[in-house]
Image 1 (spheres, protein in one colour):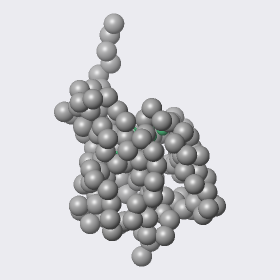
Image 2 (cartoon, protein in one colour; image 1 turned 180 degrees about the vertical axis):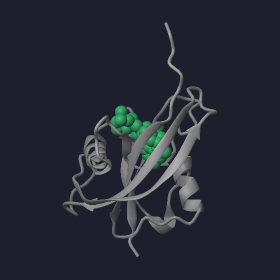
Image 3 (cartoon, protein in one colour; image 1 turned 30 degrees about the vertical axis):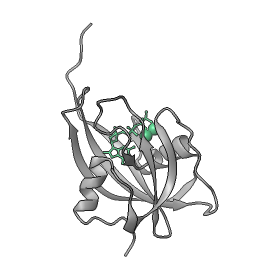
Image 4 (cartoon, helix red, strand yellow; image 1 turned 90 degrees about the vertical axis):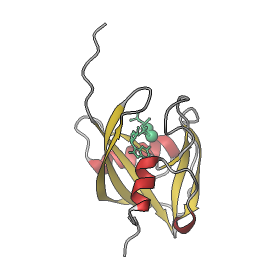
Length: 146
Ligand code: 8DG
Ligand code: MG
Ligand code: MG
């Protein structure tokens, strides 16, 4: 079988802001994958023809059951994962949003991909963070409106 040359892909991930907290889940991936068991934002691949905010709303709903609103673009980072067993490269679009219903609680709708969702205080984030997130936090990036 023929293998296509690898290309960068686009991902959309979402900081869901609730008070001073954000929603994170532990990634479950194959052993040897650098991201295994790290804490990451909800999100996934941008589909053909999709707007960034549509992708954010869809991925959050698929992964957590949560309905979000006030979805806004924050920034974009370049994330090559060249040392993984299956090398990949993501251009990651970071969005922020708030819950449509502040009382709604997250469900772990993709238990094969996530160990569970929880709220984490921005000033006391868990470890280890997924490295694209770790890189942003270390750079001083803050997703909260000023
Ligand atoms: P899909 O089939 O639902 O579209 O994909 P997924 O299974 O939800 O993909 P994902 O791994 O959750 O997200 C796609 C890529 O986005 C991931 O492999 C690397 C990149 N990415 C980052 N930072 C983050 C993050 O904080 N969370 C998530 N979920 N993905 C991130 O660069
Ligand atoms: Mg997904
Ligand atoms: Mg995902």
